Image (cartoon, rainbow, N blue to C red; front, side, top):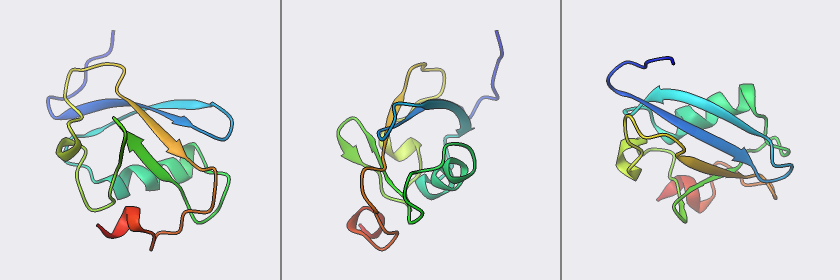
Length: 97
């Protein structure tokens, strides 16, 4: 069993277009934008402009931290849906609010 540093959160991101998923371990202080940058490298959305991330029925805004949305250290199975079903541009409402 691997241990993570004290401020690290474990999240499971599932890509809506095909159901593939990937686990990430990031600082709870990481922003949603930083998570999206990791996704572009490791679990690429089907559209080049990006995707929306959804956790507990909320669209995650790029400027907020993972901690802001209640992603907690030491909690497993924190599932985030990556909605890549259409071309969500970075200037969309999910990034602006």
